[in-house]
Image (cartoon, rainbow, N blue to C red; front, side, top):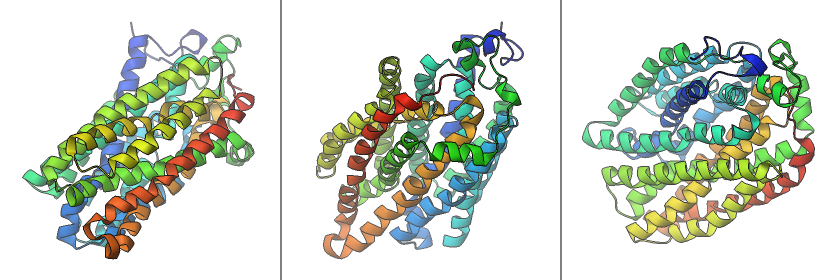
Length: 441
């Protein structure tokens, strides 16, 4: 029988396995909406560009800076609040908010109205991720967290793939505006169901039990820590900065590729909008889901003996993915290009479960939401804020030399950020074992 309050069971337990899986499923659906609304402009930008008369640089600003501006900065105070009040209420309000702003994107009439609506999407999504990381850490024991976070991170390829497929097909069949209106409306309807199903467990309850504290361990729900204390603590942890900057370098490429590859497929490979939506959507779904799960499973297995494996795993994945992507960018055969893209797409998302698990264990349980938000602040300000703009800017500047092929070379030059990510993750792996925190306090 599912307990009425999964956070009050003995030893900080969070209910049955079925209950935990249901909560994880609801969080996954919310994160799928998160990324769907965030990334859908990647497939819609060509018809938007044609209708509103935008440049690649403007599209990069709208897709990246407009979103990241409030998403990254407001995530920190919202996460600080989530360490003190109901995390499920925060996620519910965030989900309803970003979905409503996605609907407003569908009625934009020019660059600035669409830019401001995207700022609103970022405002809403600021409350969606860090509290979810904290919830997962309190629903699943340490030995399962990388896999649980990997399942949650499936929202990235699911949201990106669904956004590309649904958005592209809807734009081709009807109109890009209807794609945004329907997807935003679905998120608004899902928000109350999420709140009804998902409840807040005791913070750090499972950590207390694992650490041999007894009962639910130190009642982290009752512990409040000033923001400055958390910020000072993580600022003095080298592993935090290496993980954050490594993930940021990876995200510059990840977000850049996610936003601009549809344009590359249409401009350089001659695909239609419908063909691109199915082609790239399948790459995101198959490659992304397999890679994220693989990263979490390997890190949980190796990390039991060596905490450094939580950073070393993505470092190896980046090193293998980079040459495959370089080959993919200079292959014109569609089938070969698909195969060369699908493998590195998975490898480049394998960091999510391992790295987010490591970040959760750099601090005690009652600091996790705030620490996750500080991590995401670095990752998204650099990765999301700069990645989309960098590739668009390079494409515009390279156009006089490469013409329609400018996006191919803009992406090729930008792939160097994956090499930097691999080096930073390897450095982080040397520091993680000494900074790992298992207990709730």
